[in-house]
Every structure is written in structure tokens, then in C-alpha cells.
Image (cartoon, rainbow, N blue to C red):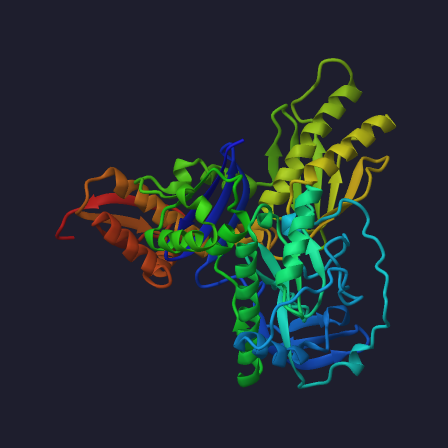
Length: 544
């Protein structure tokens, strides 16, 4: 199977697509004016303590206060300040620390299939069964005995604001490197489940045990497999210095201040997705390509030859056939090859997926037809959950099957298909009614939430593409037309008045970049009656 990572960047947004045999399996987008927040570390100020919810609201400088549950709070973060400074100044030598040290009892380990702030699940530490009850080795103090109003604390965003909810916060800090995840507030040592070799697991545990500092835990990521001791030591040094900088900044900055921002989407994609099983990485934006090349040269020198700059005139997502696949991922109905189809309905509380036979009538009997449709739907459900980034509670309504053996077969097939998903999932067996209840970890908005907004014409009952999404599509449409013409001259583009105002305002940098690249002057003209995403292009005389 050929895997390719495609990065499309412009002045408005960065889009990342992961292809497996030219089939889109993962898609992410980040608007340059709306950078992602997950992983950012802040110096916060407690606004309210709610004993009835055992939680607190913390001001971190965003529009909405963050939510901090008692299970996500550690009252000893400040105690690590002196140690962090000593590590920064080289006064503390790294020495072996027993790998059997335990994290705080309230903190989920990578082996728990339970919800937690650790991002170890992106390396395969996930569960497809009901989470085990965690054993508490110490009693948890009520939050009103740990926090007070106006208290200053260091917190990290574990989940980005979703809908009307603010950020989910944690004081169990985790800093992701290429090979390791550093957790300065615990001594736990975890390992990605995707590293299957017992010999390699023991080797990595031994190395990390030797080079880790006296305080702090680590998660060994999948990318660490086969890595030398020298590279691991470099990752440890980088992450401990990074934490020392965070603590030092926290001592001098006022509350509601950003202490550390995670990498932008392009570099996060390199860190998290670009590995030896990716055959080629393409980027179409020279400045972004240079940053990626430098990042890969520093952290992944063995993969430098796989990074290429896309220089074609055709938009890169058009060249790789990605745009139609994104459009299909926004549709409510998804067709199966047999003629059956799935229907996705995303609501506030849960997502319902309905499986139907559609045009497929089978050849032998009804039970076999139903089984074949359900098994085909299993693969598509797993793919769509990953592509659409659907999280929270999910109900899959398979077609009713009379035989228990067939229900078990479908349930096992779905469990197996979900193992390819890096997001942690938990599912129950299929019921007699053909229903599967499952959850999928949600740390950011779904694809629909990222690319669409509520339609003002239907009182929010459906969605339309947002103005930034349509503006980017219009610019790509102008690019397609400009690439077919000779360089130079002037293009007259008639479009919706609101779109014209947007492109002359927030979208002007993208328009200017397009003009410079194709050596063409683009003149926008409002035309009533055109939908926001529609436009008309013609060659304009030079004197226009």
C-alpha cells in the first residue's frame, strides 16, 4: 500500500491529507487566523470553584473560560519550578530512575482504555473494550480544598473549545517530541502498543531509564522504534529544556498568559504522521516547504529524500484527486460499492449512522445479502469516522441479522477495523436489534464543524460552507483558470458582493499571492444574484 502525505498551504489556511493508495483517509485544516489550541500551556487564574461539580473555571485569556475537573488537577506543579531551573542550568545530572514508578492515582495510564489527557493513543494505545475501573491508591481531596478563587495555576488545553463549550484543561502537562512525550508532573513511563517486539520494548525502556531526569515521566512513541540512544537523549534534552523555559516564563508573566504554543499544523503533521511507512511527502508552498525540510533534516534526516516541493500549475489537491473526496466526506449519504449506502446524522448529543441495502439485492437469500452489506459497511464506517473526525457517542444501526454468529462476525470485523484509527475508541457488542454503541475520543472539531457553518436561511437546520472555505475555493478556481492562460494580463472575476468584500479584506493576502505567482492582475467585480461560492472569469483588457 502506497501512503502519501499532501500539504497544501496558502495565506488563508493549511490543509493536510493522508492518502493510502490515493484514497483519502485523514484530513486536517487549520486557518492561519485560527490556530489550533490543543497542547498550548497557559498561566491561568481560577475564576470560580464549583464544589457541586468538583470542577473549576479558569481564565486563560481566551473568549471562554476553561473547564478544569478535580481529576485533572495536580496541586504540585509549582514545586517543579526549582528543579526545572536547575535542569536548565545543568545543575542536575540525569540518572536512572526506576521504570516501575506510578503516576498519580487519578491519572489514566496509556494502558487504561479510559479518557485522559495523554496523547499516547495517537501511537496506538487505545482500547476496543469497556474501560477498566482504575484503582485509586490515595484519596482525592475535594476541589474546594485544593483551589481558591484568583489562585494562579499552570494548565494545558487537553481538548479544544467545541461548540458552546470552553476548553477542557489539565495540569498534568505533556510535551510531545518526535520520539517521546514528556510528562514533567509524573514519573510514569509508558510505551506505545504499536511497538510489538518484546526485545525492542525492553531496549527502549532501558535507554529511557538511563537518560531520563530524576523528575518527570515519558511515553515512548511509535516513532521511537529503532532509534539510537543518542537521538533519544537529544529528545530528552530538548523536552526538559522546553519545560524549564515554560516554568521560568510562568514566574514572570501575569495570569491569563500563553506560556507555550504547540507546533502549527504543517509541522504537527510531520511530527505525528510522517514516518517510514509514508512513501512521499508533497508540499506546494515554498516557504512552508523550506520549514518542513529544515524540520525533517533536524529530526528525521533518514526521511529527507522523501520530501518534495510540488511545482505543478494545477492545484495540488486537484492533482491528487483529493477535492472530490473532501466533498463526499461532507455529504450525508455515503454509497457502498455493492449498491448499499450509509446515512450520517450528527446531532448535539451523538452521531447516528444508518446502514441500508439500497440497490443491492444479493443472489442467494436475505440473510446473506444483509451480512454482506453489513460487512462492507464496517470498513466504510471505520474510514468515515477517521476522515470526518467524528467523536463522542456514536450509534451504528446495522441491518437486522437473525443469526447470532453473523452478528458476532460483524461486531468482530468492526473492532478490527477500528484498530487502524489512532483516536481511542471503545465499543460494545452488537445488540439483537443490530445496534452498536461506541465512543471515539474527541479533541477537536469534526470535519463538518471545521468546514461548514449554520445556514442563516434555514434557521440552523442544515449547514452551508463557511466564508473562509468558499474564499479558498474561489482562489483555487481562479488559479485553475490562470494556469491555463499565458502569464500576464488581467482577469475580471465577477462574484457575490459578500465574497468580493471578503477577498478584498481578510482574503487579500491570498489574492495578492496568486497575482504574484501567475504574474496576472485580478480585478474583482460584484454581481448580484451569484451564490457566495460562484464566480465568472473573463480576460479583461489591460485598460480595464
